[in-house]
Length: 446
Image 1 (tube, helix red, strand yellow):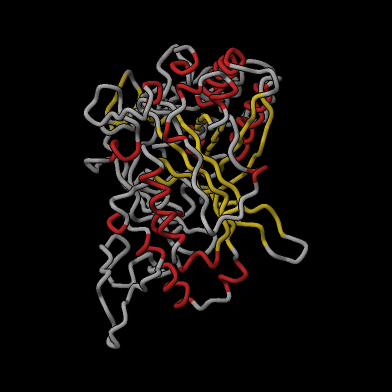
Image 2: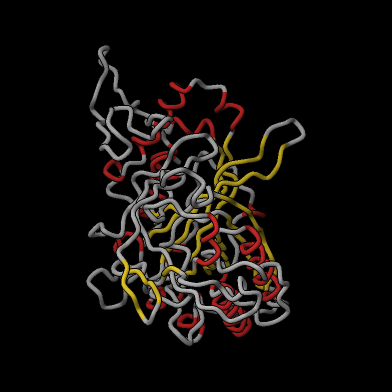
């Protein structure tokens, strides 16, 4: 987890420009987000109000996010809005959100391409409305009536089995082939994979739940829930100043995520458009500007972890617990010195430290964009907490991204003793829907 597997660093806000009276981001592929200048429709209790756009992207090692450089007043959270339409789907480039839901569906018996297209059309319209702070089109539950958009994002993806169910096997990407088995896996098949995957995130729990309920209701008779998981992150404005988030192990984590300013960012994270110099034959045209999401439920064995001394925990991770700086010295963002030794000649950053193993330069440049959620699903009868990480990472090629790093972790990561991979999924997430389109339209109607 650590440098390639847990929460985020917060970074300065992207420069802004004004478009049609709204404050919008200037530059980078996060132009589909902007900040609200007024109160939302729901905040005005049904009166039409103007909300602008918000948020872009910036880097951290394991959870990627872009939050403003200044502390965020809690009262402003509801007004933040992310646009549904854009080059990429929402929920990839935006910052970590305070509340999240991951849910997978299987198409119902007898449902095929026609039913799937109608479902994605319904889901896309619901996502567009809710992300704008509007009520669902039909039978809105009013759960989020008093709140603004609260940075709500809703993201859709397709699993391996979806293509056979819809007769679209020839359009299934090679990159969607099932992930290999890893020795540390203890996977529950009932909570893994699925025909369709939906990621929901927001900075308000009721707004996120409202979206989850609307998506479930929209599924109707076309699809049924296969599994569903709930997660959370630190709320924006919860700290005196912006800082890297901590995971449930107490580790400050988020220093080496790829950044949009990196020259190869798009190449690593997003599938290129057909005809571009980076396009490959294994990616079908409908995946242009999309990405592949690996989803893992990683349980943290907190009782075992908390028995370690702080020094022992730092040796497992390779970073100081207090401020996230590498054990080789410096600050959180200082480059790790893998060759530095102590007076006895021992490596300062242990050979099996998680941060050492996951470094891109130790994995052929493999990189993933991390947007995880922590989770806590209660306490077992023996008093052990069922808690950990809902790992979500994005990459243009999961074989070169997640699989490369996980194989190396499998061979000797010191952190493996304190975590357990319990569920897994891989999903093809197409590019964003243009105005008048629904997500996946180029696949389902191509």
